[in-house]
Image 1 (cartoon, one colour):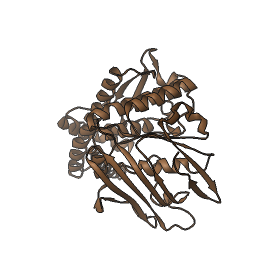
Image 2 (tube, helix red, strand yellow):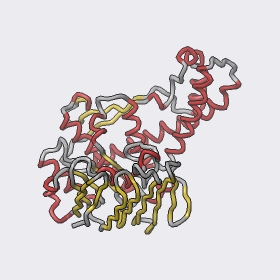
Image 3 (cartoon, helix red, strand yellow):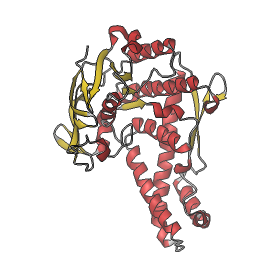
Image 4 (tube, helix red, strand yellow):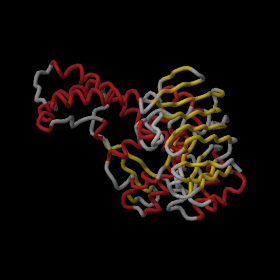
Amino acid sequence: MAQLYLSNLTLSHFRSHKRAVIEIGHRPVAIHGDNGAGKTNILEAVSLLSPGRGLRRASAEDMTRRPEALGWKISALLHGPLGINEIEILSEKGAARQVRIDGKPAAQTALGRIARVLWLIPSMDRLWIEGAEGRRRFLDRMTLSFLPDHAEISLSYEKAMRERNRLLKDMVREPSWYAALETRMAETGVAIHHNRLHALAALSNAQDAAETTFPAATLTLECEMPDDVEEMRAALADGRMRDLKAGRTLVGPHRADLFGVYATKGVPARDCSTGEQKALLVSLILANARALAGDFGAPPILLLDEVAAHLDAGRRAALYDEIIALGAQAWMTGTEDGLFDAMDDRAQSILVTEASGVSTVSSPT
């Protein structure tokens, strides 16, 4: 099987990195350094090599280095099943991101056709106990990893829903104002629902076929909406008076929630211990990666920020073994180099330090 990896990552005026050049091989990358040194900023840069807003969901302006605010640029050399690609992501003085692939302007969605990037970050540790919005976003990131067009479909749905909600808030009752919007919402909404179900099926199959020390999660999509476009359009039309009273759309994939259960225990994920919740998340990321390896032809690049948190030494070692067996280039961060001792020489080690607001990256060892 082919491998997907970066051999070069260059950051210019990105967050705390005035300039950083990272030359690496295909092995996993262990990044260590003090809190605030700029480790996560490196992972964020890699996350931008896939469609979407990156692991922090930050604006282009927020990612520019201060106080210069000159704009920023990320350059990468990507090796994958389709060959080698030079990727540039840049923003000029806080303007919207631009993407170039092999020197030619490209849409963000084009990144999904040449690369797959998955991440697990500390803010996701509360996934099961916080609101449904975060779980929908988590599910959509997994869905996007399988179906790159999912992003465009979701944007089209959200745009149509915003316009419909504006009519509802203005108490517009004339049906002709709603017809075209509801047709677009029905078409894209059903596609979103089916895409999510496709992703959940792929994850379930990947978990069932794997030998892993991490607990499997049984996932269910809770969403009261029709499976058929015409039925969805009718549901939107029939619910218009109710929606007028609420001032918003009350049916559709934007109301969905992801319900997880610790499979062997039969315990809802929200009721599990902190360590169990973390292990379930790791399990899902690994299952996503395994499914993608077969679907895309190479395992995805993994971004695991502070991955050692809430994992004991045994589970950390098991995670590293699974990453190696998968053949993924995983970028992992931790405050101490010792957290990655179980990797031995199977990983490349990078030290990140910070002084006077400027991050410095050591050469890989």
